[in-house]
Image (cartoon, rainbow, N blue to C red; front, side):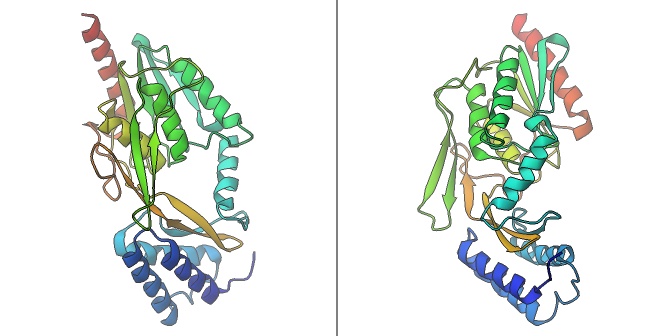
Length: 306
C-alpha cells in the first residue's frame, strides 16, 4: 500500500472540489471545510487510506448531503487517468453479473421479469460485449404482454445506456433528461433513439419498475424518466436520491475523489430526484415489490382483455 500523505491528499481534494463541484458557492464552502479540518488535525488519526476516505467523505456530505460526493477507497490500485477507477471497477463487476443482466424470467400470465444489476453498464464496455448482452435481453423481452424491470439491486450507471433502454420502452422520439454543468449555461440533453437494433417492447403495454433503498443514480434516472412520462408504474421503496452526474479524480493510488460536475433537470417535472429519491407509485417493502407488481400486471392484462 502506498504511503499516506494526508496533507497533500486533502489539499488536492479540496482544490478539485473548488474547481469542479457543480455548485460554486457550495464548492467554496466544502473546500474551506476540508482545509480547516486538516488544520485542526481531524485527519491525523487516519492511519490508512480507507480510514481517511471515511473521514473526508463524512465532511464532504455534511453540507448538502450529496451522495455522489466522496473520497472513495479502492482496494485495487486506481489508474491515474480521469475516470480510470470507475472503468476498472465496472469491468470487474460486469464480469461477475452476466454483463449487467443477471436475470430474464417468464412469469405466469404473460408477464416477463428483467433484472438489471448491479449497475447499468456503458454499452461499449468489454469491447461492446455489454451492449450485445443488453440488446439481446431487450429483444428477448419485447414480445412480453407485460414487463417488470427490477432495479432493486442497481446502484447506478451510464446515462447513455439509460436512454438506450428507454428507447425500447417508448414509441416516439422523447426528451428524457437534461444535465446542466457548473457554469449553468452549458447543458446536454438526453433523448430516446430513433432506431433500436430489434423489436421494441413499445410504449403501450403494461410496464412496472421495482425499486429499493439501494436503487441509486442512473437506475433512479431510468425509473424517474419513465415515471414522469407516465410510462411505468414504480413499485417498491423510495430510492436513495442521487441525481448529479460525477467525475472521478485520482488523488492517491487507492483513493478517488468523486465530484459531481452537473445537475439533472427532468423536462416534465422541472426538477430531479436529488436528495429525495424517486417516490414509488405503489409503496411496499422491497421484498414484496415483485409479488405486488406481478399481481398488478396480471390485473392490467385481465382488464384489457375483458
